[in-house]
Image 1 (cartoon, rainbow, N blue to C red):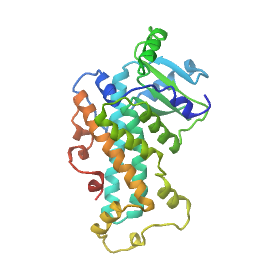
Image 2: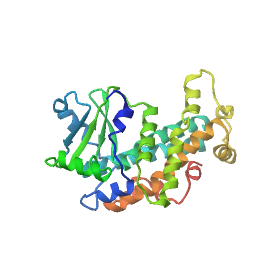
Image 3: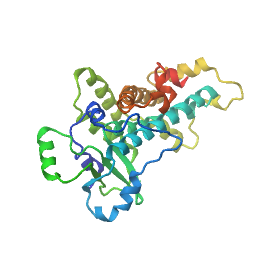
Image 4: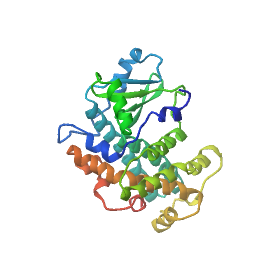
Length: 292
């Protein structure tokens, strides 16, 4: 398995709705972002020798659904934490850096989207490992083949570790494209899936890379002013179309719009109050509104 794209080919047909409805955990599910940590990387580490040199392995993960829900909520907490801090940059007048972190928020959002499809990444043994928590999903023939080949495996997960050791930013966006391509969903959800796929094809990191890699590049010089920021001007910049930073802002808008209803559905399935994950989930506002 020479690439992450080859690993993604192992992720079969599914939908966020099917994933959410398939989850079985004791409700209400107890979650506290200030306390809970993932146990999956520790488990994979403990079983590393068993995995050997295989790039694609089915193993049993005890308490599979509990781990999936907890780790998805951790992904969500990270995402909304960064969104909240972007707002602080905007209101504080650090507009250029706000857009840099808007990209970082969108990138973390790709992890949350993947998690809502049952696919999460972990750092183990100095590399990235991808875990598919629903390897039994797919087209009917895929499901039958999986049941036949893994009938003795309880709580199965697929462990993917291709030759490249690190999951790059472009690889993260490519995974979103793969998930959109294998999504099975009702017609009223297709537009959001198509929009997310389009975002994944854009150069969302262009503004961030300009700031990082050009020694003197900066977008708004009034960021350096001691005078308080004009929030109306900041809002206008967020809503501007056609500029280099507009692609980055749009990426977060689409990611936010995609994950919010699906995360709320997951919380409903598990008996978790959405606002306990983030107060942002209790607000009826667009990402641009929230950022200002």
